[in-house]
Image (cartoon, rainbow, N blue to C red; front, side, top):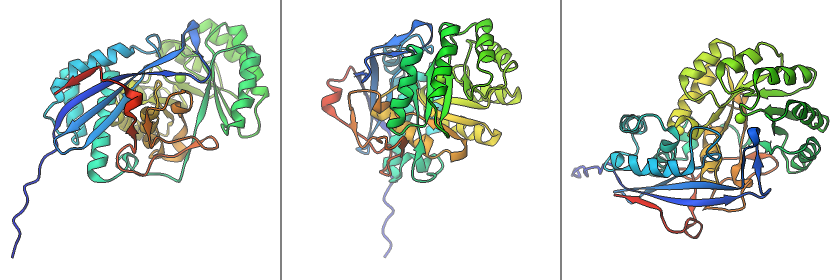
Length: 377
Ligand code: MG
């Protein structure tokens, strides 16, 4: 006897909910170029519910409003604007879903990021697979992290190198992009604290003019340090790249596959910084990641900032990146005092691993989220 085929219920998005969460820092303040600082990170958590009873989660947390063309309230306003276009759509058709988001709202990749990540969480839960598997497969048991060192005096930053090494980190990213003479001191003081195998990056976050960057790279020509995004524009960065033998990282200007191709063709970078929300979510970050692997470009895999859910999303993308191309990743949930989800990856000896549970492997803590600020559907 043949059983009648059960009609398959197609997954559909039924509602989108968002919460605003404040994430204070263990160190009180995070400072970078141009006198910018953040005391309390303003993060947005998104839940996408489906007709199948499965809910996916995502998170977007800009590094304040002055880092990229993105800000926290803008994420929420954008999600409110975009959500109606997603109700009734299939959350597992990630490329089709991204096309729909791009058709409904031009640009604003950071608005789309948490929505895209929540749909990857749904796809993982529906298929019973961790997101890392869906992104191409897990490499090894863990991967390396770097530690960002907030902009302080050269001595304070050098001391932090020692402190963070005690916590297991071996890669250190200094926030420079301030007064060039102080920045030269910062880089030299921190370099003196390095042990064999340690890696030092000086990230100016677009903070130098070309003449300032030229002075810094010349003064540190004998220091084993990577130079990251010295100036605002791609052209200015290229001009500095041509004047230094130091390995070079591009970050803020790398926001698309087209920019990766341009940088690769121009040999403008040795490493690129891939931030999930900068490019619009995991779907586009994976495309860029795979393009970088094909081009032989190493990557820092991370996001602008975030808590447990952003850290989980980073961990799945990083853990599914071939290790020789993964320069480092970031565990933002260890920088902040507040936990917003259980199951998020936790740093151990400077290393992190993605959850092996289906989806992102996290469950938000309703007490930490409080009341929603937005519900559509
Ligand atoms: Mg950077």
